[in-house]
View (cartoon, rainbow, N blue to C red):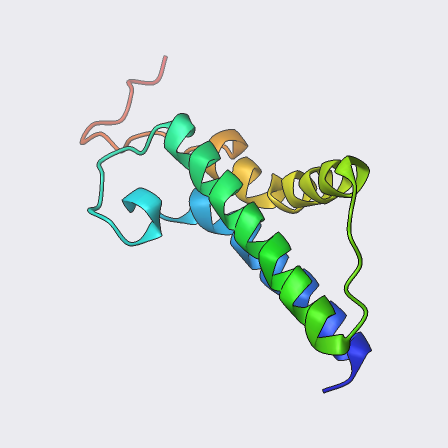
Length: 110
C-alpha cells in the first residue's frame, strides 16, 4: 500500500472516529444503550478515540520505517485536528433544529 494512500486512510479513520461519539447513544460505543448520553461521556469517548487514532498513526509511521519522536506541539495540533473533525457530529447532535412534536389537533385560526 502506498504511503499517500495510508495517510488518506488514516485521515478518513480519524474523521469517522471523531464523529462516532455523537452518532450513537451506546456507552463507550459498545456498552448499554442510554436514553440520553451525557456530554461528558461523549467527550471521554472523543479523547479515547483520538488517542487510538494517534496510536494508529504511529503504527503506520513505524511500518513505513520513518518513526520519529514527537514533542507536545504535535499532540496539540493532532488534538485540534481531531476536534475539528468532530464538528459535523457535534452540530448534528446538539445544534440541528429539532422538528416540533406532532399533536393531534391544529391550532384554531383567527
